[in-house]
Image 1: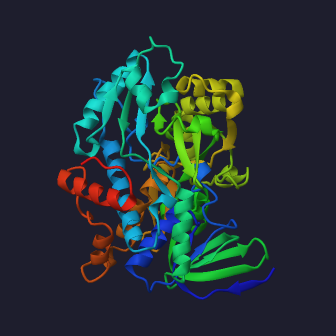
Image 2: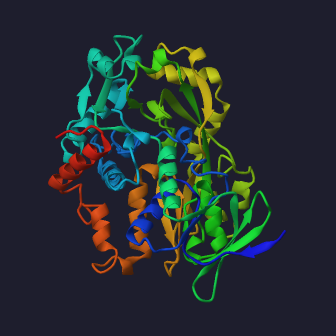
Image 3: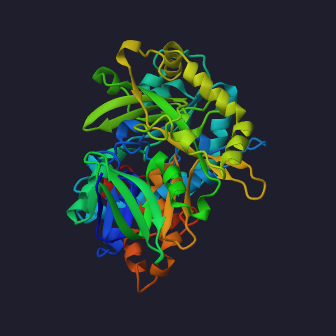
Length: 499
């Protein structure tokens, strides 16, 4: 096996998914002279979690996902997390609109389509929850125009398949926001990576990172192997972004930074049911989210989705969660075991002890028969025919196990988190949902965490405010700014807006 040295770069991005593509695009926009390289272990971009069939593609704006709005003991609903995610999606919209206006993305329809977002529940307790949720959300400017109904006929207008064949005596309720979207993050990633390549940014495929070592001059030497030729290469860089999905935890461990101590990962797999029959797909135009089973992880909230992928409309239902020791869909069964270290063994054991309900749920999902899986679909779509649906394996999600300070325990975190080196020369993005939908907001966090000295009026700040007109404005509090950006981005992106 031969070894070669590569020319130095300013920025090295590991992983060619939506996270690296977005972060790289933003860095290049702010400083076109930065020399960057992207390395990806597979033969193309967006083949893991960013690929369309590996994620829900909801454009997570926290419109319909009930797990973002927990119910308090007094019956009221906490919408604070939903508002955070909702306005983070506005940041993504602003970046996409900027790129469309500049011609970097020729047509937003290549990855983005209008699609109403709905929540749907049945049973007295769930209906009461959804009614309280709607009252709290519709009172806020971020959710103006959210509709609510318990009327079978009205809900049938919104989502015919959901009501067709349903018991007319069943107590049901639904909310709807017509401003929702369906996003093909695989297509978006390919557009962004293609644009970067057109701008002279080098993207290396079949390049598996095997080592990250900090040099005496505060640079990083990143060594990767060409999985086709077997040649080992090394590149020196001033800044490393680890945006490699489930593999981020092991790459973070390879870096050896003290900030990585104690972190671990808990992988969750999934299966979809997919329908491509035109007579069925033409009867449903919405993303309909239900309520999760007790103990289930957020990404397993059941939903019946309209998906538009490569100009073909399909329906997606699921996901049915499961457990695999792989950290990537194209990973190894040894991934989980190889990630166990002396520093994270206690947090891992602590999380295992405290999350027995989740473990029981995942085991139950693994053991569930295809008959039981289809029954869950029929809860949403009573007249569904088994012959019209096929299984599709979803992408792997690795939930964060975060060490608790002081007591050597750990916490299972459902979300995303940046782990930043003290000298700001390396950052790793861990976690899953809402993930891709908030990639632009995460990229801005990377700038704030790692390049604060560049965010000045004589540095990157003027251009940053051009890309994100609401930068520095709290859209949760400023209704006028929120309305203005949604009106502007909806027009550019060709999606629905409520004036």
